[in-house]
Length: 276
Ligand code: C5P
Image 1: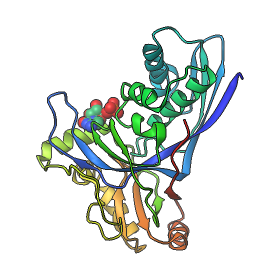
Image 2: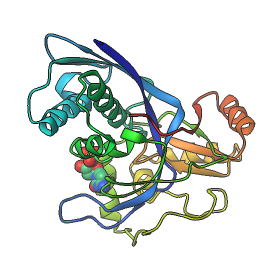
Image 3: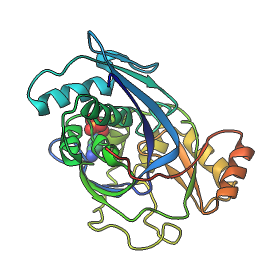
């Protein structure tokens, strides 16, 4: 076996609660994350004579997939045979959809299989935590309750009856810049310690604490949110740290009709857990 291909799905924070900044510069998080069925990159890895990462967004060392291979070598404790990673991008960058993180997670899953390293899901998640805060969740995806820096994971019952119209970012937003703005607003509240026990439809838990910070940096987000509200979704949500928004529907036809009306975006639903 010299080559493997796999999907790298986008993620959606169905809720993202953010506490006050920690001494290490990260923020304590709590929320429900899902991988999305309907918006994904495709990652192919093959053995090669030198390591390379081929992506239209960021190549080689600039790509999180490169950092993922470094982290994997650190876990294994010895240099790995060189791999060529090729990424076919559909997930927009700087959108809050976890595209780069998901490419890195897919690289870890595929390299583990191609090279027969024998790491289990926990081993891959521990490795992923050294790559970035969203990467551990994206190893297994599905629906999970995510806390800590993003690295404490608890699988949840899949969310039923949710369709998300995910729209392209109004503009790319830098995650550190949004968190800095969040700190500047001084709006951090205590975060929940337990996963929600009510449906997403009647739960006020479906919210993103980064909204005021992102909307402060990119006022056009509020214009886009109003346009999505006019499509009468159950709720409009900022994706991660932005700049994409998602309109959440409880009916697939209404989601598709809204995508038609808008003439843009991807109709997605929460995906199954990913086999490692
Ligand atoms: O972990 P990662 O490198 O993906 O995080 C990118 C940036 O997002 C961090 O440098 C930090 O500014 C912010 N962040 C945070 N708290 C988290 C996760 C990310 O402040 N829990």
